[in-house]
Image (cartoon, rainbow, N blue to C red; front, side):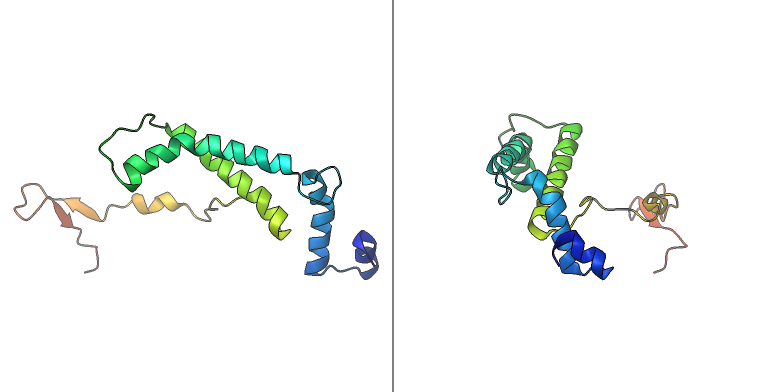
Length: 144
């Protein structure tokens, strides 16, 4: 019982059978001409795309975030560029996760199952004008 025929006869699928299906159906789009191995040119192209995408962010992260060097970074990336880079990293991880583990995932990005911004609708610290001990006073409804 190999491949799909085995699944139709049994009527249920085990984890190993599901992985076999994923490998049969999905691996072909990433395989070389022989169909036996991952296409090396695809891997090279993906590495090149990743290197290009992270290049300007790497210098900025090194000089501003990790070490706070005195020298200015040659390029300050824009938020949209950083967002595009993160999306490419996510897309690439998802692709290779399928190849390495024969398991499909949609994204590494979090899926919020609640409205996370609601915690900001109710102030819990209130400013007290003219306070000698500081400008912030803890609200009365805050548990000590």
